[in-house]
Amino acid sequence: MAKDSRGRDVAPTLRRVVAIAPLHLTVLAGRRHLDRPVRWVAVSELEDPTPFLEGGELVLTTGMRLSGADAGPYIDRLVARGVAGFGFGVGLTHDRVPREFIDAAEAAGLPLVEVPRETPFIAIGKAVSELLAAEQYEELSRAFAAQGRLTRAALQRDGTAAVVDRLAKEVDGWVILFDQAGAVRRAADASAPAAGRADGRCSERVERAARSLEPELARFRRAQSPASLALSTPDEHVIVHPLGRKGFLAVGSERPFTPNGHTIVNAAGSLLTLTLEQGREQRTAAARVRSAALRLLLTGETEAAGEVLAALGERLPDPPYIVLACAAGDEKAGAAELEELAEALPCFTAPWEGMLLAIAPASAADDIAAIAARHGRVGLSAEGADLPTAVDQAKRALAAASPVARFADLAGQGLLSLLDPAAAASFAAAILAPLREYGRRTDLVESLRAYLACNGHWDAAAHRLGIHRHTLRYRMKRVSELLGRDLDDPGARAELWIALNV
Image (cartoon, rainbow, N blue to C red; front, side, top):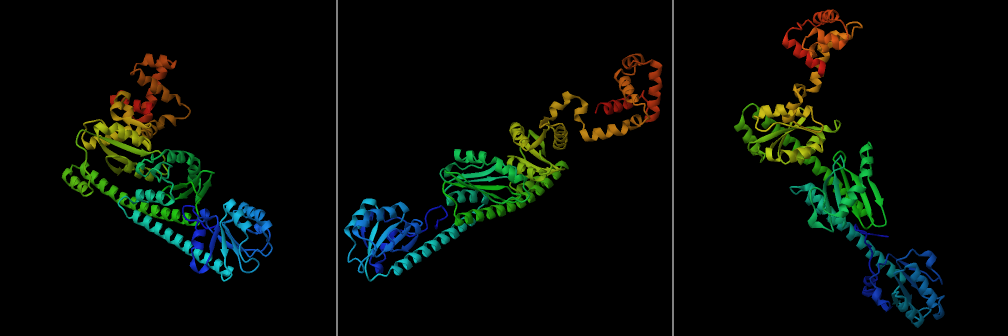
């Protein structure tokens, strides 16, 4: 049963068949139902041909085994089988179509045509076959034309969005482009073309579809090489098409997808993969340029940096600004996630030392931080600092972020909150290693902690430890020898205190 890309019949109507002049067909009944598609021609002289029919046929007979008394049951069986029409050949068994058949066909709403003696049944079969071939060729042409329109859409400035919008129209349904994490990048709904938005909230139907596809997308992400998936309900038919590492394409329609429909969806998927890859290359190149501009800014080459950014059509925000240091939430997909974040943030961004740095107007910093926090962790500098200082502050805040931290808030958490956790832990392990390795006398570490906490007061520290002050003096002498540090030196005490509290 031939269908077009939107699920409609690709078959000539009975009206087209009876309009072929050389066939000399005459409509005797059911004229109002001539728009039924004819999917084939079946010739039968059986009293009941329906076991050998599928529905949609134009049934031809000379009526050699039929009489007027058979008309009602015969027509009823044809109608129940869903045939497109009934052709009665005259000039052999019957000089004319029996009136009983005409009346029964009219009553049942079944088109009945008279086939003259000079028109061979095979001529009708050939004519219908040629029409079917022509319709199928036309449908293939329409599919090629649809691919052409999708290709032209891909060549537009925002090719990704244009392909998504065009595909929704071609399938007369909805389309959602998901990123690798399952977030909606673009959506379109043919029933609400004016409502398409980059955030995917173009219709309730699309939002509902996006939610329902979440389990399937999670399964896709776990698969090594996911294949396309087709889902069907009585009301909707959906195709989910993976786009490699670029994300997923979901397409839905009220009608089943035909082979030509699948071809159109596959073509759109290939175009989207290409446009996303090209866009990624362009974004990567632009990111390198922005990183170079940031390097110039940090070294004081403000004018040169401005020229570089102007070439990209970008500029830094006017003071006061705040620097945000962003880290990906998923380390495995870190680079890709930071690329998506750079695209999502409405401000200057540049990759920097495995992070993404953003320079945002102070008035918009909180909103931008909220967007960044959806992708991972983010640290914010204080307002009013010069750029090198702001970058350093943002990095320090990022080290304490869970998921957001502001440098201005770290001061109230003490000096230790300003230190990089990994660096501080390495420092503490190295400086205290001689004490931890000193035989079984692990009490040297806790003795040192009590001594420093009591600001070097022997009696108070000994009382806290529950030992004699002479025992504590011996231990501190041993600590000084093992560490090679003078415990009366304020600098040494400060370093040891930090190491004990990391």
